[in-house]
Image (cartoon, rainbow, N blue to C red; front, side, top):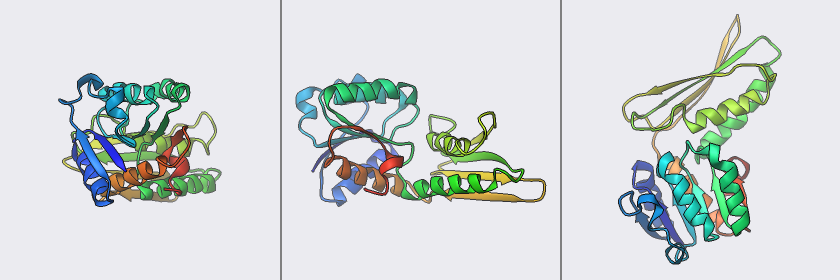
Length: 230
């Protein structure tokens, strides 16, 4: 399979390495080579089976517009752009493109989301309050993280509409990512924590997602809905 990786940050580099390990042909574009998505012309995009984006919230919208307009297939691991999700989904639908997006491509994180749902549902009627803390590296641009926001949505969906679920964000060193759901009552406290030891789980999940997407009919997919299929 021919894969185009957009972004040569720490995760983007690892995505390219893992895609090559999987036997795929990989081409990488950095920000200088693809300013304002200028490199993503229709003939260029047509040369790849799937495009994987791990860039920045500022760059990803232009990249999506360029790729989806060609009817291409795109896996987006960049976060911080979801206010434009409806627009990008509409573009994909109109052009017969495929878009797979997600706040986190780690299978462990997806299992954590399922456990969080069960934990909240089991405790919500016993006087517990729920909060989330997250820690990432200092160069992460969005705060709170997309994963923390998704975790909050999962928890909030099990609670009354007016229930607050606070998020505390920390930026420390080169931390790959720690997310903790805390449920506290007057008598005890429960903690559900996912700690990333490296970015490899994110990159591996993104490559598997690209492999899966390449075989699907054009549509818009949330990784949370398909992680168990990749």
